[in-house]
Image (tube, rainbow, N blue to C red; front, side, top):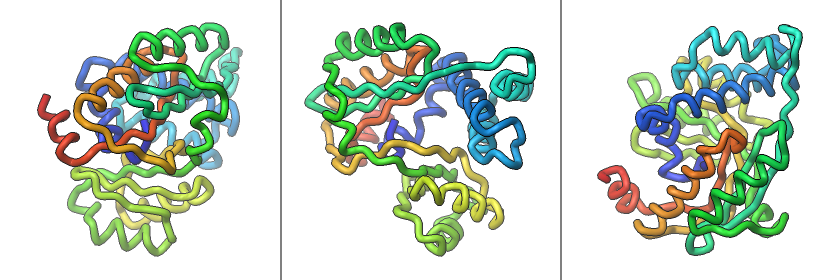
Length: 252
């Protein structure tokens, strides 16, 4: 989900807590495989692979799985993966915009999975360009607050590099950058002794929509249904919520 969503900042943690570890691991492994296929297996020379591995480790993906994914992606074990990225567009409850990113080796299966999840959960599919116009690619870095990662320290590093935005999400800081600047920013954070949870290039909407509690529940149910598909890698949306609505969701 979008890096700007208050729900998204706890999403991958919640996925593990909710017993969805296996599906989460499968998506993390795909990320590593594709990064190794495109940029090669050398972690030092492939920042996309570095970030994919970092995200996997932060989500407790075993090292054996990481090593196998690198070898498989780079074709070092005799077989190379061949995933295709496909984007679908749709609307959720109350017209909330959805951008659905699939990473698949079977386009027909992916299309069927996406359509079924959307239509069964109160959404509709949209023609290409219907919602994608409002989304832009951005680098999104998530930093967990701790003794080292304080407001002063994170802002000091990030603002010096001219990032687009820094948001305080309670237990985390969410830093938004241009995609080309993401590696520079996360490297500067590391040099300052500040660890980061994840660094991804995501699609962020320029037209966020505030939703009430009931709409938020329905949109999240739709996104969860999409993310249950092995074909769906990421779901981006323009829905956002007030701190009160976010608190009510967390309390349920």
